[in-house]
Image (cartoon, rainbow, N blue to C red; front, side):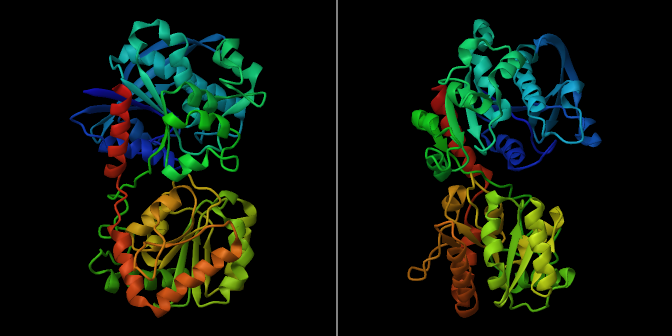
Length: 481
């Protein structure tokens, strides 16, 4: 039996802000229990819902030197879906209405504490992992501490570490003196081949330097981040670590996203009956959102954070042109004010064609996946992306830019060979995107049998966690040897 410990800043079902929590919550359940004992460690945030806190039992506590004082570390435990979760408890660190704040020093202090406490807790739990699997910059110090002060302790010798990058843009950077003082790491660690990066200390860089293996969330993104454009200043290091770097596509939980069992939609459907049933969801959504009720209209869905990364400057550029066409556009999400207001403006200007829902609703997101004909995702960069995987499973054809995980998961339509599961364009260019949307619309209106065959292929594509779990298992086996 091989022991694996996931260490992360969030995890489903306890706390979630984004895709990272889905990975941490779903992947351990899919690893083969015959060979792997996988447990998860996250902070005990005060904003975790009370009914989930009620599942936690006190295990033990101790005091740890950190940031020039002795800090309390409590350890709670809970079992969910056969997985053991540990929680690091310290009220002064993990109190607040949200799990992340905009105060960088506060964040670095909190997650440096969490990284050190996670390692310090292990001997008391009687669980010795063969591999500690760390996620994003918040746990970047785990591989560093593991190679530094914990090496002297017999218990920790030989424990391997994996660093997974979910989004390279966020790195945990601050000035060297402050980080040195908070972490207690000696000068030796703050050189340009270790934690120092462009005169600052960089926690993610530390994790990438010291981990035994580095992964990211799609094969294309693993290649892209070795280039200057996508590398966020770490491309040199990622090239140096190329032999240890691999990309494994995230999965989605097909229990949560399953059009046949979805309680949020009016007409559940599957790969056999979608031709009759899927359209009922479109009519219901048109009625709910006050759009023109016409089941033949080409409906484009967008469910996203409204940020630059997601390609909304392209959409802003061609929105007027797109609205002259025979389409309906349904948007759900929040984000940068200029994009929120842009969609509100077009909703006002083209009221029967555009519905802008500037908030977040899980139920409405399911309805949009089920009702739309196409799903637009023109990202500037996309480490993996989960929305296109959900769209595929709902038979809603993705229109994406060929970057990161979008390139790995959406096969472009080829009308000559009748292959593909979606439409894609290469350059970050608004009119190239518009031409691709028009091509998709042409196939939808003029070649309906081809469109339906594409839905067949999209719904048959398997991006469940089971597939990704096999790739992670291979990596663990390779590391432990």
